[in-house]
Length: 116
Ligand SMILES: Nc1ncnc2c1ncn2[C@@H]1O[C@H](COP(=O)(O)OP(=O)(O)OP(=O)(O)O)[C@@H](O)[C@H]1O
Ligand SMILES: [Mg+2]
Image 1 (cartoon, rainbow, N blue to C red):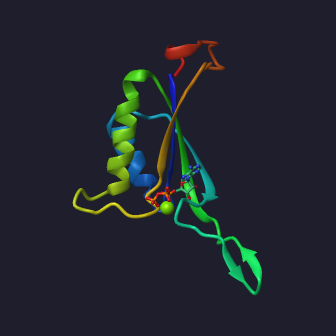
Image 2: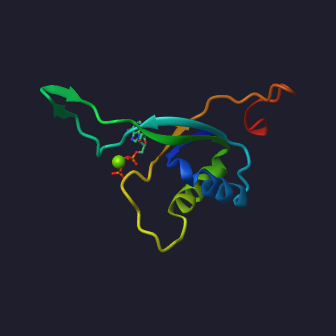
């Protein structure tokens, strides 16, 4: 099992969700977060270091079985890019994939791949 965590632009959330659902990935957690990527620099303003503002983003968390990892990544990429002709832009976001040790469905007590 893997946890796919994606940080995307807030306005792309519905587009990405639609793409995930179309690929059979229907369970998701969505949070509003803020952060910045590599392009932000520390600047000096009136002799003080000023860290530029955090940018609002959306974090998607999707726990999947192994055979859905690449499908989830592909769906997020397609959803973020939207129209296939669109170029990639700075700040498009990131996808992190981590190993998930356990998953428990509280209602039934099922564990592991069947609980996902
Ligand atoms: N290494 C990281 N660790 C934690 N969060 C990150 C990391 N990189 C990016 N993020 C999160 O993802 C958001 C989008 O990052 P972003 O797409 O700007 O990454 P980048 O490395 O600057 O790539 P790009 O050059 O395409 O902009 C950030 O605002 C931040 O919330
Ligand atoms: Mg960036």
